[in-house]
Length: 301
Image (cartoon, rainbow, N blue to C red; front, side):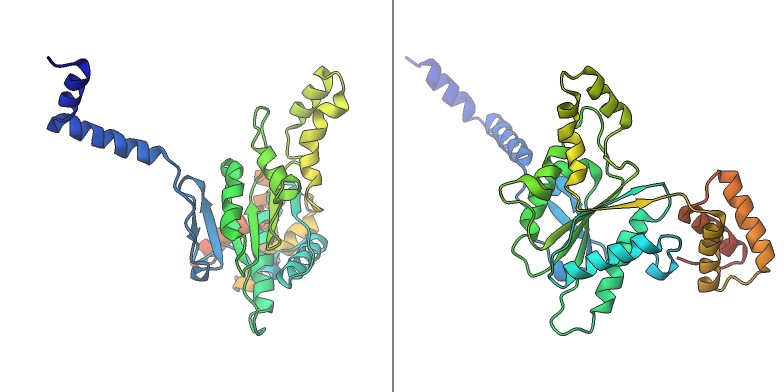
C-alpha cells in the first residue's frame, strides 16, 4: 500500500516535474545577489558603478571640460585641485561637498581636477593615475559593496556622486554617513568622496523645517540628517555669476575653439541668450557656444 510520501516522490520523478523544479532552482539562483567582480583597473581611468550587477564599467572617454576653461570659480578651483593633488600624492585630504547654484561648473570641476592632477604627474616614475568612479544617487546604499572592490588595491579612487540629495523618507543617507566617517571599517585610505548638490545640507528645506516644528527637541530631530554634511571636510560654494564673469566664460570658449566673429556681436548674442533663459552660468555660456559653433559649421566638445 502506497503512502502520501511515496505518491509525492513518484510525482516529482516525472519529466514535467523535474523540468519545473529546474526552472524554480534557476529562478531562485537569479534572485541571489552576485558577488562583486574584481574589475580590471588598468582598463580605464574612469568607471561607472552599476549596483545591480555589482560591477564597475570602464569609461574610455570622459565627457569633460579643460580646467583652464572654467572661469569665475578661481578660488574653489584652486582649493579643490590642491585637495586632489594631496590625495594623489598619498597625503591627507578631505571629502568634498560642492554645493550651490545650478550650471556653475560643480561636476565639470570635479572631472577637470581629476584629469588635471593625473596629467601633471603622468611622467612621474611610479605614479599610478587616480581612478574616477561615478556612483548614481539611487545607488548610494550600495557604497559598502563598492568600497570592497577598491579596498586593498594600489590605486587611489575619487568616488563622485553628482546631484546628491535626499528626500523626506529616504534613509540611504545612513550608508553614506557610515562610509564617510562613522562605520567600523570607515572609508579606505585610498578612497575620497566628492559630491555635488544644490543643497548645502543635502536635505530639502521643508523637510528640516517640518522636523523642527513637530519634534519634542527640534535640535536633536534634525541633527542626524544635518550632520551628514559635516562628514565632508570641505564645503565649496558656487554662486551665480556676474555679467562680466559670464562674458569671460563665453570669450574663453570663443578663443579656445577659434570661433571668429565680431566680439561686439558675440557679446550681444551671448547676453540675449542668457536673458532668454533668465540665467547667467557656465552651463548657459556653453550652450550659447554650442549654438555659435553650430552656426559656423564647427564641431566642438
